[in-house]
Image 1: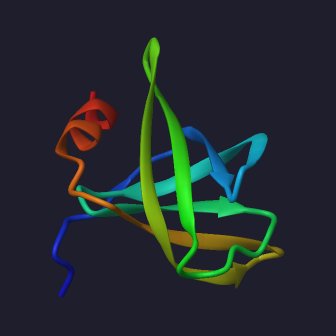
Image 2 (image 1 turned 45 degrees about the vertical axis):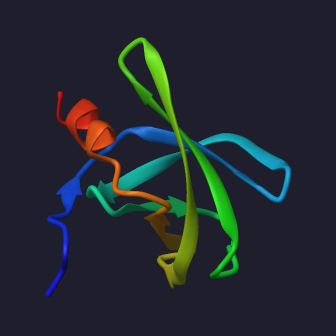
Length: 96
């Protein structure tokens, strides 16, 4: 059983891995207070630290997390990220 409820979402996100910023916006699939899932066209190694930028209205919410899993889906990859800390403010902002 999941610790946090997942909420579907369709907002663009950006991410940075090991100093490399992906400037193309990737679609966020779902999120919770504990993490999120997004789709990308590249394999991302689990256990890597990831920096995320997610637009929320007029601002960009930034957070760090750890890639927990990456799996191929329909020619792309879905990536599961665990936030370093529970991010209740992010969940509230996205819900708006």
